[in-house]
Image (tube, rainbow over all chains, first blue to last red; front, side, top):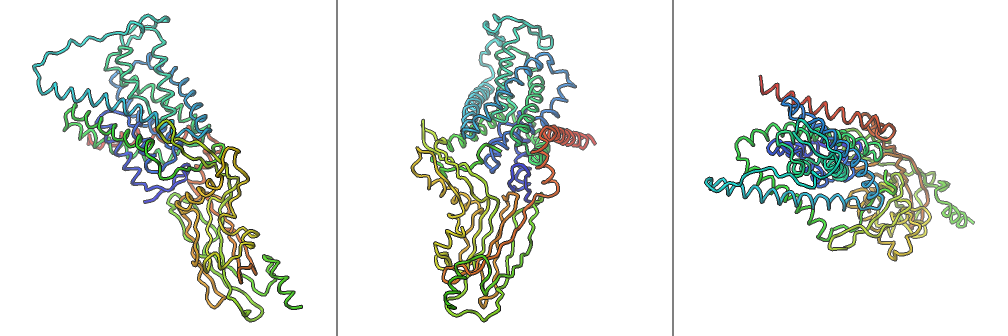
Amino acid sequence: MQIYLPIAEVSVNAFLILGLGGLVGILSGMFGVGGGFLITPLLFFVGIPPAVAVATSANQIVASSFSAILAHFRRKTVDLKMGMVLLAGGLVGSGLGVILFNYLKSIGQVDLMVRLCYVLFLGVVGLLMFIESVNAIRKSRQPIGPRKPSSRRHKSWIYAMPVKIRFRTSGLYISVFPPLLIGLLVGALAAVMGVGGGFIMVPAMIYLLGMPTKVVVGTSLFQIIFVAAFTTMLHAVTNHTVDTVLAVLLLLGGVIGAQFGTQFAMRLKAEQLRVLLALLVLLVCGKLALELLLMPSELYSLTRPGGH
Amino acid sequence: MRALLVAFLMLLPGLALGSEEVVLGLSKDKVSITTSFDGSDILIFGAVKRETPIPEGPPLQVLITVTGPMAPVLVRRKEKAYGIWINRDAVEVDSAPSFYAVATTGPMKEVLKDVEDLRQKISIDRVIRSVGAPMNIMDSASFTDAVIRIRQDQGLYQQLEGEVALDEQTLFRTAIELPSNLVEGDYETRIFLTREGRVVSSYRTVIVVNKVGMERWLYGMAQENALLYGLMSLAIAIAAGWGASEAFRLLRQS
């Protein structure tokens, strides 16, 4: 069934988009990731214009994070104060990101920048995840091995910074600058790449800020919802590139997929899941990298002058 | 004297003063882009009206063109730099149709002289207007060629030589396929009658392509009322996502 997307101005197969949303939904159900980092490149592959893909996945992320955070509020695993600080940085970052995005669009390098960001981040995250999970599998095979004492090491330079604030839910007393900076970086990434940024923020919160793992996911979701909503609005107002029809299709597929994903996840071991996710991330990364490295079959590209 | 008059009439194309005139029919003069829009076929048919018998000599030929809205296009070319392919040179083509189809009764060279093509702007190369490229770009023609090539691949530019059927030098018909990636606007449709490559009569009409219903509403809102549209997109997405996951939860509990 073909459906004409009003903003992207292309006709796509509705089941293809539903399936795409479903695939990402399965993954988010299996691995507990938002999947924004997969949706945007997959939309490139099916021929959605990059500007529309980035703006629309921001919209889709708001929705999928919203249903996820409700569960975290019920379990009280959201550090609101920390969330607010991250958010303050995030909104500034998102604003800067959209300005950067529009500048790159005007000089015709937005495709390149978005792809480079993807190759870089997917490559690094995929590789780290792969190494970590392979090590975990190896360890689980020889269970009597000597275990390292797991002590949460606080980075001393982070504790030397001024303007300290007490975050009760996280049990931290640290400067506001590191979370502000992390928020800023993630906000900028969200605007340029059309991702939630959870895959950057979660490790940063654990390893840099030293937050307890149980509040990390809820708190990052809190920040992601508002930053992605803000990004969506900025893209909608400045570029007119948010496609509601596309977002709803992705979302419906995603919700259905997530149900199956949760079922699959129960039958596999956590380490095996992570190896699979790492391989998938590396696959997408490799495909994007190849497109940059190999000579394209069409050297020329057409755009409307002066944007929309 | 008579020969002079005929020659004179031939120099005045498009005025339909000649003895041959087009009577046109369209299968539809309006194309609506709905949610389920997946391209559209338009049947263009008609007859040649004459007061006198069919003139002797070379047979009549028919050319039919359909032109979408004209717009400037920015063409960028990739070059290899730092090991990867990035956009480098850019040329703005001042005016190119978003859609262009030309259908003829025979090979382009036989049915139309170059002079007439230049005057009437019939072949695609004549329709695209490019004033000039920046000084540093020597091969600006290759950018115009790229527009034609890319849009041909997308089915937006079509050269349908020999696709117009002509019976008894009187009845003609052709089908033009409008692809699914159409833009809105007025699609000018021209019919030219030629003899020996010279235009003896022409006729023009307009096919209107419009988004309708939900497509029209969403597109209009996104352009004119962007803030409200953004808020609405968020609200719809949240409602849909939340609603669907709650529905699944209830389904599993029951």
